[in-house]
Length: 505
Image (cartoon, rainbow, N blue to C red; front, side, top):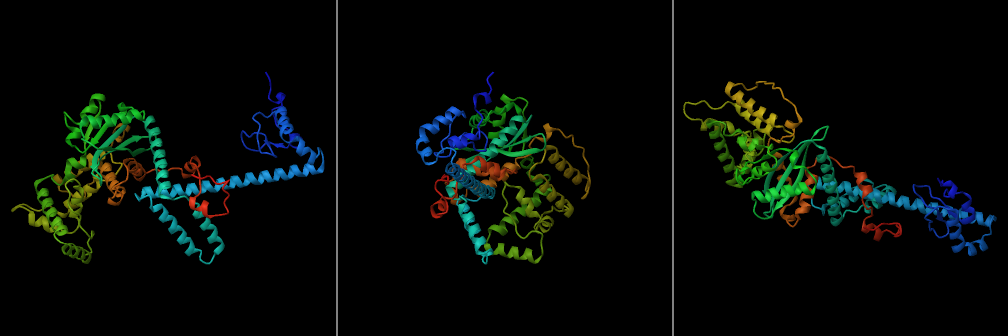
C-alpha cells in the first residue's frame, strides 16, 4: 500500500525558500504560491516545482538569487503581506456576519410583533438617533458605533427575504420533530382576512420527548369554495409533500361547523375514512358557549348584560366616554366594556365583571326566584379564564366544567376539588378547543391590515409562523448559514470598505 509521505504529498518547509510556496493553516488548505496566489491541486514536489519553473523562475531567480539575503527578505515580506491580507479578509467576513446576525435579530423581533417589513429601517434610524444622544459627548465611540449600525442591512426587501428564511428554519425544525413524534393532534378553524380570503389555520400538538409542543402547522388560503373534498385534498397534499404520516393523527378539534364535522360533507368524516381510529372534538369553548347558557337564569342575565353593553358602546360616543369616566371614578376593576360578538362569545362574559352585572342580575330575575349570588358570577368568570389560553388538555377543560357544575349544584363558592389525572401522551396531545386558532386570527389581522392588504398569502403565513412560535432560533447559527453582506448604503458611502472584500447581496 502506497503511503502519502512516500509520494511526497506532505508539505515541506524548504519549498518556501526554493519555490515560494506556503501551506495556509486551515483545514483542507492547498499549497499557495506567494508570487501569484495560485494553488496546486495535489501537494507534490514535482507539481510545485513545475509551477515555479514555468511561471516565475526566470524573472524571480534573476532578481533574487537562490540562498541570498535578498531572496530571504523578499519571501519574508511576501509572507507578511499574505498574512495581513488573510487577516483583513477574516475580519471583514466576521464584521459582515455580525451585521447579518444583528439584521436577523431585528427582523425576528419585527415579525414576532407583527410589524411591517418597512419598520426595520425605522428601527435602524431610531438606533442611530439613540446612540447620537446617549454618546453626545463621546465623539470617538459615537462615530465607531454609528459606522457599525450603518453596516446592518435592514431594507424592506432584505427584511422580507430574511423573514422567509427564518420562517423556513422554524418549519424545518417543526417537521423534524413531527417525524419523530409518536402521535399528533390537530386543531382547525378558518377565518377571512382583510381581503376576504378564507384562511384555514391548522395547529399541531405533539410530545417531543421532553415537553408538549403547540405550533402552527400551516396557514392555508382557500380561494374558492370550502368543500369537504377541497379541504381534505389540501390537508393530505400537505402531509404528502412534507412526508408526514396521517396515521399518526389521533384527534382533531374543530369549531363544529358543518363543513368541518358534517356526517356527509364534513372534513372530519373524510379523514375518518383514512384513519378510522381518529377521535374528533367539538371545541369545548364553542360547545359550552362559555357556560352562558348552562341554565335559564344565566341566559337571562347574559342577554340583559349583552344588550346593556352594546347599547353603551354603540349608541353614542358620549355615552361611551361617560361610562369610562364613571368606572374610573368608582375604581372599578375594568375601565371599559367590550362589544358582544356571538362568534367570540368569551368576550361577553368578561363584560359581566365590569360593574354592571349585579344590577342587571337583580332586574332580570323572574318573580319569586332568587338572583344568582356574586360568588356564582365570580365562579363563572373564573371558568371563562380557565377555558382560555394555550397548552390546555381535554381533561383540564372537562374537569373545569365539571367542577363548575358541581359548585352550582352544591351552592359552594370556594369548593376545593382535587381530581386525579391519568397523564398519558395520548391524552395530553389532544386539543380540547380551537382557542389557539382563534388567537392566531387576531395575529393574522394584525399582520395583514388594511394598509398591508397586498401582502401575499406566502408572506402572511411566514409572518404568522414566527409570531405564533414560542421557541427562539439560534441567530448566530442562522447568520453563519446566510450569505452575509453589509448594508448597500454603507458599501456605497463608506470609502473605508474595500469592494474586493465586501460581498454584495
